[in-house]
Image (cartoon, rainbow, N blue to C red; front, top):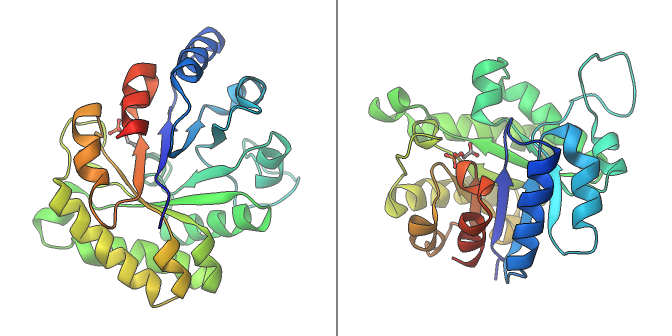
Amino acid sequence: MRKTLVVGNWKMNGSKAQTEALLSELLALGPWSSDVAVCPPLPYLAQVQALLQGSGVMWGGQDVSAHNGQGAYTGEVSATMLKDFGATYAIVGHSERRTYHAENDQLVAAKAKAALAQGIVPIVCVGETRAEREAGHTDAVVQRQLGAAIRSLGARIGEVVVAYEPVWAIGTGLTATPEQAQAVHARLRQQLLAATPAAAQMRILYGGSVKPDNAAQLFAQPDIDGGLIGGAALKASDFDAICRA
Ligand code: PGA
């Protein structure tokens, strides 16, 4: 039995005051029977750690460097540093990183590997654009993206979380139907199972305009094990409702 995981991806949003308000409101609404985590912008990581320590809610980075430890990599933050702040997760390969920062499958796989090496669980994002879906290339795209991570991690792929996020559904209000999402999730799990039997226990999250009113139907699908939540993670009552879905 896989435990549902709901991760809030705050993206480039918030302030010290908003972080404090959002988390205190959220903690007052918990606890939840699902696993819950938030990924704030990095300047707020220490504040999030202080507010969430001991609460049962986990936290992580929205990205991580492919380079480990310390070094001359201006602007980068290593998994070692995330670990120093008690982080559990690091999102890697989010479509906004792939699009605006030209991250390719190989770099994303290297980031996942660097995270795992430091005991940070990578949340490996895959997803097709609207044009790719309309051309019938959804499976080929997501399998290529996931395949790069599988080749880089080998059997350790069983230790990651996968997030299927159709690019056309992110921040657009368009959601994949539960059936559309389930079909992709089932094929991703088949691909993972070919690499490790542990895939039966792996969590594959859905992301892309998840809201309180569609979360329950999505999470009820057999291969959807929770969600990666953008916009709705910025409102405590919405995020709480999704965590309960
Ligand atoms: P959204 O973002 O929920 O705002 O669509 C999801 C994501 O990008 O992780």
